[in-house]
Image (cartoon, rainbow, N blue to C red; front, side):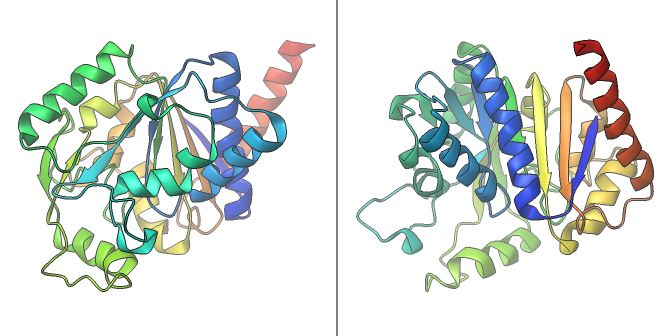
Amino acid sequence: MNILIRNTYEEMSRVAAGIIAKLIKAKPNCVLGLATGSTPIGTYKELIRMHKDEGLDFSQVRTFNLDEYLGVGMDLTKPYELDQSYARFMYEEFFKHINIPEENTLVPDGLTSDPDGYCQWYEEQIKAAGGIDLQLLGLGRDGHWGFNEPGSSLASRTRVVPLTQETLDDNYEAFYKKAGISREEMPKFAITMGIGTILEARSALMLVNGEHKADIVAQAIEGPVTSQVTASAMHLYGGDLTIVLDQAAASKLKRVDYYLHAEKAMQEYFDKKQK
């Protein structure tokens, strides 16, 4: 587990984009697991800049998104602020700005008529693609990855889940209220990759910013492994996990000095190996 702490959101976004870009350059047909929410927007903006200014090529990349609201689908006839689907978020914030083929992007279908069957199909599509090379992750206020709410099995697969009241409240304030959608109208269920699905990715990149996430960051990184904080499953992960935090999100960690020391020591180690 590599924990990188940066001064600002902009700095952490550049670091994250650099990690993703390095993979794309080394493996042009890589498979990325992507996330929505406010946190990765800076990373997506930097990747878009790298595509436009530096020629970063997404033409062979394939992507799978973590989740989507059940009963919601992208509607390009609506203004962006009135379309609350994660598919629309990905289109507006990332996909339409880069040269990735539409058929190479897959966001769970919230309008499927057979949700359980679709979830099984989604798992099969990830396997058929050869698995996920790098999974991008955020961190919910209650410590969840995707929509794996507290109490989710740490071996769970892609499935339909009911959303907690805390998640509903957060999403209402962040998205639905400004769109003029009532609490009664907003979706109460979602399709999400499971924790077991996420842990099968060959590498993972978790991004967290803001003081409001500091307590849950400390619980997830330095607390016990528990299904009540599903991101704590990171301690069961056998792949290459990098966690990028801004100083505010890292402010409640007890071992900050060690994480800073470890990053510096590892950089010096790799520099010596390359000489």
